[in-house]
Length: 270
Image (tube, rainbow, N blue to C red):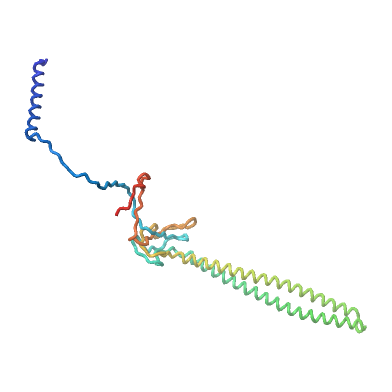
């Protein structure tokens, strides 16, 4: 079906007339006036906001760790628990460390006994030296006396030789006993050194036993607990962190990641 050109022109004329009528009506309703807003130009602040997400943390925090390895037996503090310096907040099973202390004490007692035995042996050697010295002095006097008697032909040279043999034998005996005394003195020194070593081992065992008690190093509030009762902690490489304590929750800081380009624009808000 074909539309004649006359009808198309008629439709376009009607649309144009309608549009003209609408603009005329709008002009009449506004009285032909255009409204304006007037304001005084003034200098004012312009604020640029840098938005970033972060975390709110205490300014001063202390990590509480364990210097020994073992199984956590007791937990006495949890999140938000206020604690005082020296307060017990956890315990590690002390059974193994108590055995080490008992063994170290037994070893120390044995070392003290060894010192007593060594000193007793040294005392016996000293007494023997005294006895041999007396015998040597007697042998020397007898030798000198028999020398004078031989010169006067009161005794035979065989008697003199016998006295000289006794003197030489006694002198060698004294040297042997003195050598044994030096050995006994060395044994006493060695036993005393062993005592010091065992005392150090006992002290270390007692320190390790004391370390099974985990105490708060500062006053504050527990903000993080990383262990549970029954858990095993290993301190072979570095001390494991059991708790984190904030000293003062009134002193806080925000830690946020800011783009490097915005860092220079930051100012403290008042």
